Structure formats: C-alpha cells, structure tokens
Image 1 (cartoon, one colour):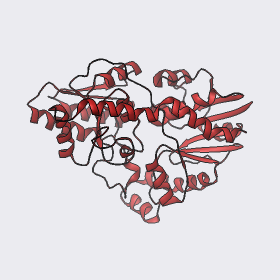
Image 2 (cartoon, helix red, strand yellow):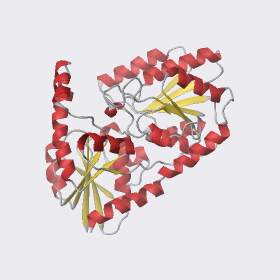
Image 3 (cartoon, helix red, strand yellow):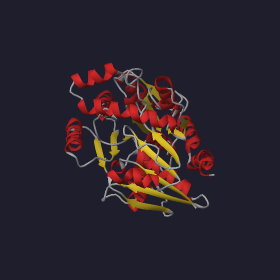
Image 4 (tube, one colour):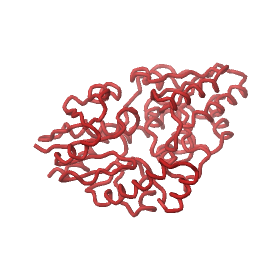
Amino acid sequence: MRTISIYNPNWGTFGGGEKYACSIAECLSRMRDVQVRLLIDRQDISRDRLSKYFNIDLAKVEHESVRPEETRHALAAADLSIIVSNFRTHGLPAKRNVYIMQIPYPKLTGARFVKRLLSGKLKEALKDRMRRELLIDAKRADRVIVYSSFVQDVLKKHHDLSPVVLYPAIDDFQTGGKKEQMVLSVGRFFSGLYNDKRYDILIDAFKRLCDRMGGGGWRYHLVGSCGTDSSSQRYLAFLKEKARGYPIHFFVNAPYEELKDQYNAAMIFWHAAGFGLDEQKDPERMEHFGMTTVEAMSARCIPVVIDKGGQREIVAHRVSGYLWNTLDELVARTLEIVEGKAAVEHLQRQARIRYQDFSRDTFEKEVTDLFLPLLL
C-alpha cells in the first residue's frame, strides 16, 4: 500500500487552489493499493466540509488533523508528498515529493526586496526571501505542477524551473433552461496583491453599461466566498456601497447548487483579474488560469474576459468568447451581445465545446499519467 499525503496551507479560503488539491486527491484515491490523506491544520475544516463545498467525492480519502509545526513530520511519513505552496518551503520530506506552485513569480531580485521594504511591504519582502528557498527545493523535487502554460512560461523564464502543466478539472455545470438578461462574475471577495478579481472596476463597467442602455432589464450577479477577517469584510462592504442604486446583487458564500443556478441563468461571464497592471512586470497579479471562466463556459455562458494571464489560454477571441484590455472594450463587446449584434448561439456552442478540454475525465487521465510513475 502506497501512502500519499496532500497539504495545502489555505484550506479555509475554499478557493481554486483548494479545489485543485481536492480534485487530485479524488483521482488518486481511485487508484489500486493507494491510500490518500489530506493534512489539515485547521480545526474548523474537515474532509466532509471540503467535499460538500466543492462537490468532490472524498469518501476514500482520509483526513489527518495536524498543527502547522507538525506538517513536515506528517509529510515525511508518506511515500509521496504533494505540497501546495505560494512562498513557504516544506523541504523534501517524503520518499517522493511534488510541489504545486500557483504563482508565476517574476525575478526575485535584491532591488525588488529593497523596494518592498521601502514601500512598507515588509511581509511581502520576507515572503520573497522565503520564495527563494521554495524555488531551490522545487528544483530538487520529483515534480513541479502548475495550472497553466502562462505560469509555466514565467517560471521557466525567470527561475529556470521546468514545471508540468496540469489544467484543473472543471465541473460540468450545464443543466439547461433559458438564459436570462444577466451578467455574472464568480470569485473570492478580497483585495490583495495576488489574483484580485477587480470587482470594483467591473461594477463601474456595469454601471456604464446600464447608463448606455437606459436600464434595459439587465442585472449583474457577483458570487463568491468571503472570509470573516475584517479586511475582507470591509472590502465586501465597499463593493456593496459602490453598487448601490443599480441592479447588482451579491451572493456571498453561496452553496454549490446556488452557483450552478447562477451559471445556467447567466448569458455573459465577466473576469478582470490583472486589470491596470503590466503582465511582464507583475505576472503574479494576473489570473493564473481561470477556473470560473471555464465553469461558466460549461453552462454556455459567453465569456467576456481580460486579455491577460491564463484567460487567453481558455478563450479564443470572437470564437468561444471575447477578450478585452480596456473598460471601453469590455462595455463595447458586452453591448454586441446585449444588442444582438453577436452570433450568440455560435459563441455559446463554442464555449461549451472548449469547456470539454478541461473535463473531469480528461483531468483524471492526466493525473494518472503524471503520478503513477512516482508510485512505482
């Protein structure tokens, strides 16, 4: 019996990285003579809670509660460790070791470190120092896995790292039903240095859209998880105040079935992570892949998403959706759909076809091909 331990330091965010790790656990648990264990260092997070939230079958996966300081020891007890990390290394504790790296780091130069210190970003400066150690261990690991070719290219360019791309497994959200006059965005409500969804500018764009249409019956729905910390709650309150007076509705910490209903009702899907930033200077602040974009496409939503980061790997402009760089372009391309100037049925059909490249069946085959050699 081969043992596999999977550790993610951020289970409680219930974001894409956590779903990705759970999806890998589900696939590996179906292999013969393998025991998979999630290492969880928070008392309020359980295997069953993760399974229910992400709609992932973890019945064959064990749950081991660990304290943060016990993590490396617990990983060392496994034949294979799978570690999700954005800045902290856990060494190479097991017989075989895999790092999942979510962030496309730029060059971690001394000048960058000093600049962050001088601008008061002490925490981020210290994280950069830790990332150097992480990258050293990642180069010695048996595998490094990333979500997209975008992340792969950045890590190759700046750090001479050769990760393997394993695109996320995307659920099929399509249930049918009639589309409504609705624009949708999905993602965590938070404002930070990495992967900020930029709901603030999307709300501005929708207000402009409403003003151009004189109302028109369209509404904008924002769906996502939000932490209980004061920073996240303040940001959510800021967004709600910004949306006041317009048909903009928030669905916070919505259950899986509610998310499915939203995808099937929405005609258009918006995404703006990375807006206003230089992709070459700040690759870590782009969308690293775009799981929610593909989820929306599975339900025949037409994606109208920013032409940066992993989004351009997903959407072919004017074939399976639209790409944009400015708010004027976002509003204009959305109006093409709203006013019936776009080939809506063709775009919906192509969005659905593109989703199938990221199905769970495809993911499971790739997980098996990737991990089986490490278990022999």
